[in-house]
Amino acid sequence: DQQVKQNSPSLSVQEGRISILNCDYTNSMFDYFLWYKKYPAEGPTFLISISSIKDKNEDGRFTVFLNKSAKHLSLHIVPSQPGDSAVYFCAASEGTSGTYKYIFGTGTRLKVLA
Amino acid sequence: ETGVTQTPRHLVMGMTNKKSLKCEQHLGHNAMYWYKQSAKKPLELMFVYNFKEQTENNSVPSRFSPECPNSSHLFLHLHTLQPEDSALYLCASSQGGHWNTEAFFGQGTRLTVV
Image (cartoon, rainbow over all chains, first blue to last red; front, top):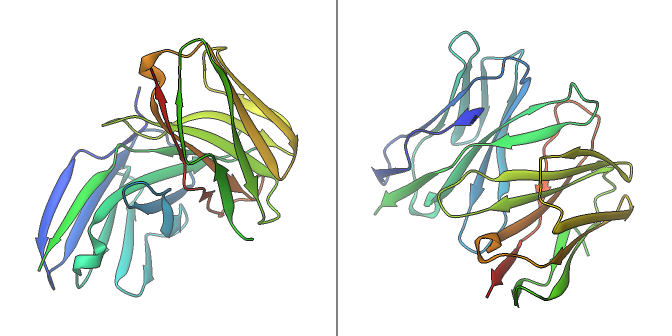
Protein backbone atom coordinates (compact mmCIF):
# COMPACT_ATOMS: atom_id res chain seq x y z
CA ASP A 1 0.00 0.00 0.00
CA GLN A 2 1.54 3.26 -1.14
CA GLN A 3 1.41 5.80 1.67
CA VAL A 4 2.71 8.72 -0.37
CA LYS A 5 1.32 9.28 -3.84
CA GLN A 6 2.24 11.58 -6.67
CA ASN A 7 -0.43 11.04 -9.25
CA SER A 8 1.11 13.10 -12.03
CA PRO A 9 4.13 11.34 -13.50
CA SER A 10 5.06 14.35 -15.59
CA LEU A 11 4.43 18.07 -15.96
CA SER A 12 5.48 20.58 -18.61
CA VAL A 13 5.50 24.30 -17.86
CA GLN A 14 6.62 27.34 -19.80
CA GLU A 15 9.60 29.25 -18.45
CA GLY A 16 8.50 32.07 -16.14
CA ARG A 17 5.18 30.47 -15.28
CA ILE A 18 4.20 28.68 -12.09
CA SER A 19 4.86 24.96 -11.61
CA ILE A 20 2.56 23.17 -9.17
CA LEU A 21 3.46 19.67 -8.09
CA ASN A 22 1.03 17.71 -5.97
CA CYS A 23 1.34 14.96 -3.39
CA ASP A 24 -1.18 13.01 -1.32
CA TYR A 25 -0.56 10.84 1.72
CA THR A 26 -2.60 8.37 3.71
CA ASN A 27 -0.80 7.97 7.03
CA SER A 28 -2.03 10.48 9.61
CA MET A 29 1.08 9.79 11.72
CA PHE A 30 3.29 11.63 9.23
CA ASP A 31 4.47 14.83 10.88
CA TYR A 32 7.12 16.20 8.55
CA PHE A 33 7.00 16.55 4.80
CA LEU A 34 9.81 17.13 2.34
CA TRP A 35 10.42 17.75 -1.32
CA TYR A 36 13.50 16.47 -3.09
CA LYS A 37 14.82 17.19 -6.54
CA LYS A 38 16.65 14.56 -8.54
CA TYR A 39 18.71 14.78 -11.70
CA PRO A 40 19.56 11.63 -13.69
CA ALA A 41 22.43 9.54 -12.27
CA GLU A 42 22.48 11.58 -9.06
CA GLY A 43 21.01 11.13 -5.62
CA PRO A 44 18.00 13.21 -4.54
CA THR A 45 18.82 16.60 -3.08
CA PHE A 46 16.72 18.22 -0.39
CA LEU A 47 14.70 21.20 -1.56
CA ILE A 48 12.21 22.36 1.05
CA SER A 49 10.19 20.95 3.92
CA ILE A 50 7.22 21.66 6.14
CA SER A 51 6.23 20.42 9.55
CA SER A 52 2.72 19.31 10.36
CA ILE A 53 2.13 22.32 12.60
CA LYS A 54 2.39 24.70 9.66
CA ASP A 55 0.40 25.12 6.47
CA LYS A 56 2.94 27.03 4.41
CA ASN A 57 6.69 27.33 4.10
CA GLU A 58 8.47 29.54 1.63
CA ASP A 59 12.08 29.59 0.45
CA GLY A 60 12.83 31.88 -2.43
CA ARG A 61 11.01 30.66 -5.53
CA PHE A 62 9.78 27.54 -3.74
CA THR A 63 6.69 27.34 -1.53
CA VAL A 64 5.21 24.24 0.01
CA PHE A 65 1.59 24.14 1.16
CA LEU A 66 0.16 21.56 3.52
CA ASN A 67 -3.53 20.75 3.89
CA LYS A 68 -3.68 18.28 6.76
CA SER A 69 -7.42 17.69 6.61
CA ALA A 70 -7.12 16.69 2.96
CA LYS A 71 -3.78 14.91 3.52
CA HIS A 72 -2.40 16.86 0.62
CA LEU A 73 0.67 18.95 -0.02
CA SER A 74 1.89 20.87 -3.00
CA LEU A 75 5.09 22.50 -4.19
CA HIS A 76 4.87 25.78 -6.06
CA ILE A 77 7.81 27.03 -8.11
CA VAL A 78 7.54 30.63 -9.24
CA PRO A 79 8.93 31.62 -11.67
CA SER A 80 9.90 28.32 -13.23
CA GLN A 81 13.32 28.16 -14.86
CA PRO A 82 14.78 25.62 -17.33
CA GLY A 83 17.26 24.53 -14.62
CA ASP A 84 14.30 23.38 -12.55
CA SER A 85 13.74 20.53 -15.00
CA ALA A 86 14.21 17.37 -12.92
CA VAL A 87 12.24 14.69 -11.11
CA TYR A 88 10.63 15.93 -7.90
CA PHE A 89 9.93 13.52 -5.07
CA CYS A 90 7.55 14.15 -2.23
CA ALA A 91 8.46 12.46 1.04
CA ALA A 92 6.85 12.11 4.45
CA SER A 93 8.42 11.28 7.75
CA GLU A 94 7.24 9.81 11.01
CA GLY A 95 9.15 8.64 14.04
CA THR A 96 6.80 6.53 16.09
CA SER A 97 9.37 3.72 16.15
CA GLY A 98 12.00 6.05 17.59
CA THR A 99 13.87 6.49 14.34
CA TYR A 100 12.59 8.79 11.68
CA LYS A 101 12.12 7.14 8.33
CA TYR A 102 11.26 8.81 5.07
CA ILE A 103 8.59 7.43 2.76
CA PHE A 104 8.74 8.63 -0.83
CA GLY A 105 6.29 9.01 -3.67
CA THR A 106 6.95 7.88 -7.24
CA GLY A 107 8.08 11.31 -8.40
CA THR A 108 6.90 13.87 -10.94
CA ARG A 109 9.13 14.72 -13.88
CA LEU A 110 9.03 18.48 -14.41
CA LYS A 111 10.06 19.92 -17.74
CA VAL A 112 10.40 23.69 -17.97
CA LEU A 113 10.28 24.84 -21.56
CA ALA A 114 12.40 27.81 -22.60
CA GLU B 1 35.32 15.25 2.20
CA THR B 2 31.75 16.15 3.05
CA GLY B 3 28.27 14.72 2.57
CA VAL B 4 27.35 11.15 1.79
CA THR B 5 29.66 9.14 -0.44
CA GLN B 6 28.76 5.86 -2.11
CA THR B 7 31.08 3.42 -3.84
CA PRO B 8 31.13 2.06 -6.42
CA ARG B 9 29.03 4.31 -8.64
CA HIS B 10 28.37 1.49 -11.08
CA LEU B 11 28.44 -2.27 -10.57
CA VAL B 12 27.74 -5.16 -12.89
CA MET B 13 27.56 -8.56 -11.27
CA GLY B 14 26.56 -12.07 -12.17
CA MET B 15 23.85 -13.89 -10.28
CA THR B 16 26.37 -16.08 -8.48
CA ASN B 17 28.69 -13.24 -7.47
CA LYS B 18 29.12 -11.68 -4.04
CA LYS B 19 29.69 -7.96 -3.89
CA SER B 20 29.31 -5.13 -1.41
CA LEU B 21 28.12 -1.55 -1.66
CA LYS B 22 29.71 1.00 0.63
CA CYS B 23 28.36 4.22 2.06
CA GLU B 24 30.14 6.77 4.22
CA GLN B 25 28.75 9.95 5.72
CA HIS B 26 30.75 12.89 7.03
CA LEU B 27 27.80 14.82 8.49
CA GLY B 28 27.92 13.56 12.06
CA HIS B 29 24.54 11.91 11.65
CA ASN B 30 23.42 8.92 13.66
CA ALA B 31 20.89 7.33 11.33
CA MET B 32 21.63 5.72 7.98
CA TYR B 33 19.35 4.27 5.35
CA TRP B 34 19.38 2.08 2.26
CA TYR B 35 16.84 2.81 -0.46
CA LYS B 36 16.21 1.09 -3.78
CA GLN B 37 15.01 2.99 -6.82
CA SER B 38 13.57 0.97 -9.69
CA ALA B 39 12.05 2.46 -12.81
CA LYS B 40 8.61 4.03 -12.28
CA LYS B 41 8.51 3.03 -8.62
CA PRO B 42 8.88 5.13 -5.50
CA LEU B 43 12.14 5.09 -3.62
CA GLU B 44 11.70 1.94 -1.57
CA LEU B 45 13.03 2.01 1.96
CA MET B 46 15.07 -1.14 2.61
CA PHE B 47 16.88 -0.73 5.92
CA VAL B 48 17.24 1.84 8.68
CA TYR B 49 20.05 1.98 11.22
CA ASN B 50 20.03 4.26 14.25
CA PHE B 51 23.23 4.44 16.31
CA LYS B 52 24.48 1.28 14.53
CA GLU B 53 21.35 -0.69 15.47
CA GLN B 54 19.00 -1.88 12.77
CA THR B 55 15.57 -0.42 13.47
CA GLU B 56 13.83 -1.23 10.21
CA ASN B 57 13.94 -4.09 7.73
CA ASN B 58 11.27 -3.50 5.15
CA SER B 59 10.73 -7.16 4.24
CA VAL B 60 13.91 -7.23 2.22
CA PRO B 61 15.03 -10.63 0.84
CA SER B 62 17.96 -12.21 2.66
CA ARG B 63 20.16 -11.98 -0.43
CA PHE B 64 20.59 -8.34 0.70
CA SER B 65 22.54 -8.17 3.95
CA PRO B 66 23.25 -4.79 5.56
CA GLU B 67 26.06 -4.02 7.95
CA CYS B 68 26.61 -0.89 10.01
CA PRO B 69 29.93 -1.06 11.90
CA ASN B 70 29.63 2.52 13.15
CA SER B 71 27.43 5.57 12.67
CA SER B 72 29.49 6.79 9.72
CA HIS B 73 29.63 3.65 7.61
CA LEU B 74 26.99 1.45 6.06
CA PHE B 75 27.41 -1.54 3.79
CA LEU B 76 25.04 -3.60 1.70
CA HIS B 77 26.33 -7.09 1.01
CA LEU B 78 24.89 -8.72 -2.07
CA HIS B 79 24.85 -12.40 -3.03
CA THR B 80 22.92 -14.57 -5.46
CA LEU B 81 20.96 -11.63 -6.78
CA GLN B 82 18.34 -11.80 -9.51
CA PRO B 83 18.11 -9.65 -12.66
CA GLU B 84 15.08 -7.88 -11.16
CA ASP B 85 17.36 -6.58 -8.41
CA SER B 86 18.96 -4.30 -10.97
CA ALA B 87 18.28 -0.77 -9.74
CA LEU B 88 19.80 2.38 -8.30
CA TYR B 89 20.72 1.82 -4.65
CA LEU B 90 20.80 4.95 -2.58
CA CYS B 91 22.27 5.53 0.84
CA ALA B 92 21.10 8.36 3.05
CA SER B 93 21.79 9.72 6.50
CA SER B 94 19.95 11.95 8.95
CA GLN B 95 19.99 13.11 12.54
CA GLY B 96 17.93 10.07 13.48
CA GLY B 97 15.65 10.63 16.43
CA HIS B 98 15.31 14.34 15.81
CA TRP B 99 12.07 15.68 14.39
CA ASN B 100 12.17 18.23 11.59
CA THR B 101 15.34 17.06 9.90
CA GLU B 102 15.96 15.99 6.37
CA ALA B 103 17.82 13.03 4.97
CA PHE B 104 20.90 13.58 2.84
CA PHE B 105 21.53 11.19 -0.02
CA GLY B 106 24.59 9.86 -1.73
CA GLN B 107 24.96 9.69 -5.51
CA GLY B 108 23.83 6.09 -5.57
CA THR B 109 25.21 2.86 -7.00
CA ARG B 110 23.75 1.75 -10.32
CA LEU B 111 23.59 -2.03 -10.03
CA THR B 112 23.10 -4.32 -12.99
CA VAL B 113 22.63 -8.05 -12.38
CA VAL B 114 23.34 -10.21 -15.41
